[in-house]
Image (tube, rainbow, N blue to C red; front, top):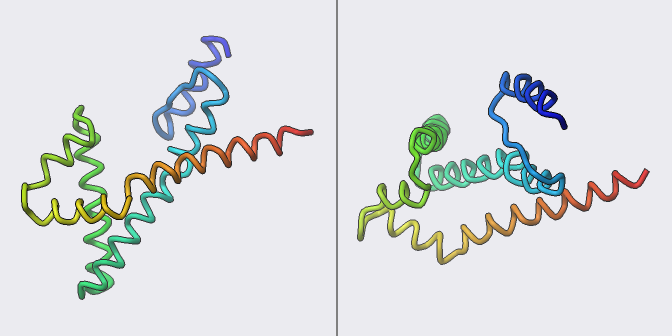
Length: 136
C-alpha cells in the first residue's frame, strides 16, 4: 500500500486499538495466531485459574473476581512497563516461595512449550485456510 493508504488505514484502526504493520503478507498468519487467537488463550488461562479456585473452595463470585482481576492487574503492569515479561515474572517470584513452587510445576508440565506449540499450530492452520480460500 502507499504511505497515504497506510496512514488512512492506521487512522481508522486506531479508533479501536493499536496497529502492527508486517513487512510480508505471510506474516499475517503469525499475527492472527498471536492477536486474533490470543484472547482465547487468555480465556483458557482464566478458565484454569477459575477451576483451581473452585477446587480450593472459593465461591463462583470470588472465583470470577480473583481470576479476572489477577489477569487485568498483570496485564496493566505489563502494559505500563518497558521490562520484558520474564523480568516482571522474576520480580513477583520470591525464592523458595509459593509462586516459585507453582511456576516450577507449570514448567515441569510444559505450560510455556504448550502455548508456543499452540500458537505455531494456529499459524499453520491460518496458512492452510489461506491456501484453501485463495483457490478461487
